[in-house]
Image (cartoon, rainbow, N blue to C red; front, side, top):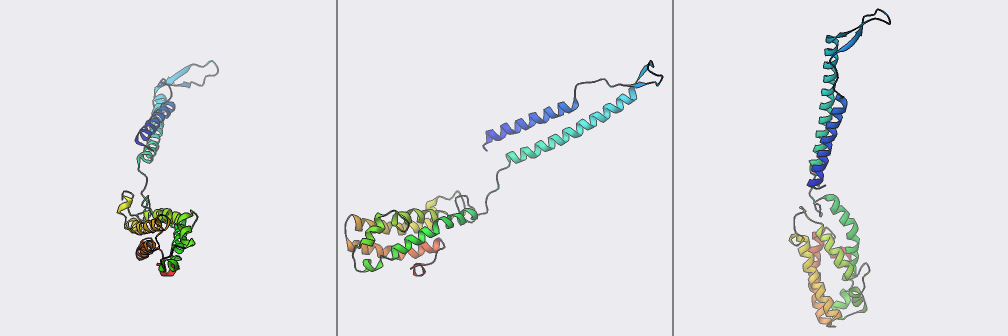
Length: 228
């Protein structure tokens, strides 16, 4: 709720409190009450000022109590309107909350692990400097386990590891490590699909493998040796 909406709601609460107090007080009335003398149907009526004053005092006290209760309720409501929401406990995530980090892990850990597993499976062909069909598929497909899916999930997972919602993503250690790894894989992709250079792909692959474990550690995943 923005500031203007909160102000309008507070004013509405104030109007409601005034209306309730006016309703309770009722229209102005005489301060006198009427008492029968007990002489029958035709008896005369006398006005007792003391009784009227007592009734009026009681009525005013009731109105005062009702007004105080109303204003107290209005104060509580206004406090709820103007109080900022509680910030989440800092432990990571776009909202600096552990709940967000846990959710991000649940959504992206499997996809990152699948992509890393597929990437590491290319080691045999890369050791020989060959561009295999599996290597081409890794960069051409967009299914889980492909580079396209790993590139998306890998960045989103690294971006979840923050202690403040105001921290720019590029300043996060996990994002920096992800981008270092990604740059080498992108060079490898270019060598495979554009330059058709097995040696170029081999060089970039080896560099990327050297950076992979740093990223995995930053996002709390097992090292590459345990993933294969």
